[in-house]
Length: 309
Figure 1 (cartoon, rainbow, N blue to C red):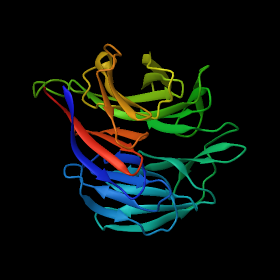
Figure 2 (cartoon, rainbow, N blue to C red):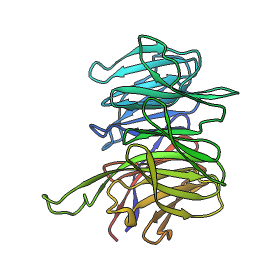
Figure 3 (cartoon, rainbow, N blue to C red):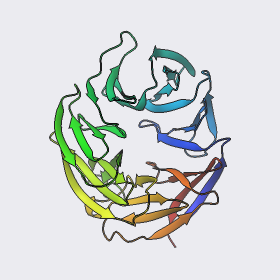
C-alpha cells in the first residue's frame, strides 16, 4: 500500500482544524487568527460555502448533526443552519469557549482563565453555572459513551454529563491531548450480514511521544487498550483509520514536525513516512471515506488515500 495524493489545497492562512460531519461527510475547516469557516465537499474538496459573518477570530467549532456551532475570541457563539445557509447568534459569553462538544442535544465547552478552568453546558436562554471547575488548566475535552473525559497537566479525569467526578488517572509524563474517533470494527471487506461493532476510541498523546488508545466503559471508566512510545519527539496530531479491523490492528497516523508516520498497533512499526512541502504539520483527520487530511504551514492541506501497489 502506498499513499496517493488526491488533492493539494492552499488556504489564505494555516488551517488548525478540519472536522467531518457525522451525517453527510461534509467538512468544516477553520484557520488561525481568522474569522472564516470553510464548508467543503469531501469528494471534490470544493467550497460549498463559507461563514464570515462575525468579525472575530475563531476559537473552536463543532458539528450539531449537520449544523455548526462556532465560538469566537470575543465570546460570541454562532449557530449556522445548513438548510437555510444562514447563521444566527446563539448566545454571548464573557470569555471565549474552547473545546466545543455537542452531545445528546446539549452543547458543552471549556472556559479557561489564569486561575481556573471550567466546563459549562451552554444554552441560548440562560447563563448556567459551570458543571465542573478545577484550578488546573484543562488541555482538552471529549465526550464518549455518556462520559466527559478531560486532560489536565498530568492526569485524565472522567465525569458524568452533570459534571460529577467519576475517576482520575495519573501520569508522570508531559501534558496529554485527547482526540475521540468512532471506528467500525470489521466494516471493510465483510459479508453484508456480518456484525459491525461501532466503537468509540479515545486516543491520548503526550508531548513526550507516548500514545494511548482508550475505551470508555460503564459510562465512567477508562480501559487502556493499547500504548506505544513512538519517539521522544513532540506529537502534533493523531488520526485513526475508522475502518481499522480491531484493537490489535488499529491503523493510525501521527504527525511529528514535517513528517506524518503511518503506523499500526499490530506491530507499532512505521509503515510509511509522508512528508509535506511546508512543514511543520499542524493537524490530521482520517475521514469515513478512508482519506487522510494533512494540514501544514502556509495554508497547505494535502488530501490522500492508500492504494494497492
